[in-house]
Length: 83
Image (cartoon, rainbow, N blue to C red; front, side):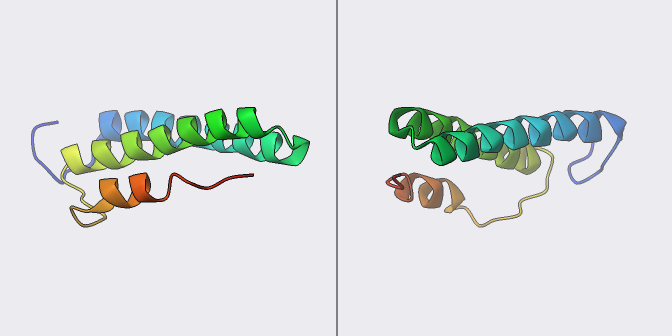
């Protein structure tokens, strides 16, 4: 990755992996919610959030800032979602 904001095959491949991880984590959250498993829901929700954060950090690193500088705080402030 030589130029910020330039998309190449490497960026797309890595981003696709991040999207797949996020999708998988969301599926786990959804399953735990449907099962009513509060502990697993909280653990899966934490993992899902970390996948979202990793994706946003990667986009930022590549020169694609989708959100303002306060996006990390926004994710942290919404961590009190419960089942």
